[in-house]
Image (cartoon, rainbow, N blue to C red; front, side, top):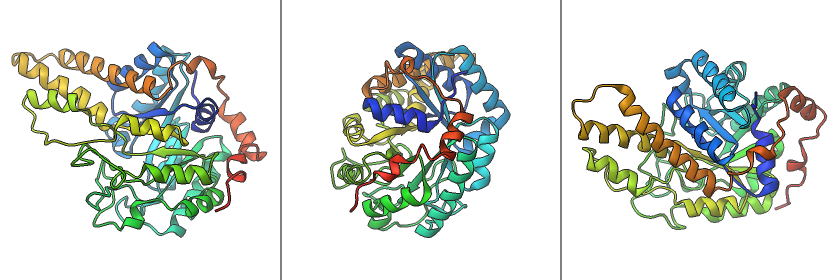
Length: 359
């Protein structure tokens, strides 16, 4: 079975200059479509589940599905990632159910709503990293609070998201603090705040440097050239998907996501993991609406799900190709988690911290 840790996958991505889309899933159809896209273009995969997805699908069902996906596509390295873990228990239970990677989001308190102090974030993230590394699992941390520079607010998704107004400082990761955070926590990847947010309604106009701070990514990469950066809230909210939904009875107001060309810019400056959820939902939802509109008598769920899976597969393949992920699956020799654990214990996975540049 080709399960891979996030650290090994992102190390390979950094070495070869590509990024990896991380697709959120809730069900079998999404998993099948993503893996079909990966297999078609020889791309390694990150599939991630939020706490809401784990509650919806059930941990045992998710674990069995991941096993099945690796058996169906045995040559595709698959990282199974916990998205936005809110405390130690969430992260460790994910590892117990077969996740090879977890995110400890200490930017918010355990209620996943209240912005946390820097000291709290460091302490809880370091604890999770230390425990996860004992068994070879990878850890992603977050510094800065995910939210919109345009509105000054976060956007809740699956029960996760800051409530109330956020300051400019909270919404932007401090590059100097990032150096300290990575050294103190020993995370394998760092999610940064640069103006992106969850959901479809990210920006009311095509984003520029005032509301999407790509220059901040470049500044952090300059100080941490060997640390893997992560962009959350990075669905592009394609116009064609909005149009399909609205032509078939939807009422989505005009909205803008993160342009793919800006993500490509980020990849050139250290972004190795790109979180995508809304685009996947929109691709499938558009087909549900289209089938229902064109044939109101249809009631077979497969007639809705099959075209929805096709649309998701095509979207995922586009991102694999645009981010440079395509063509790399067959180049990766997967390292087992117990071997990764030995490397953590021996300090062989620390150089990305040790080579951080001074401010």
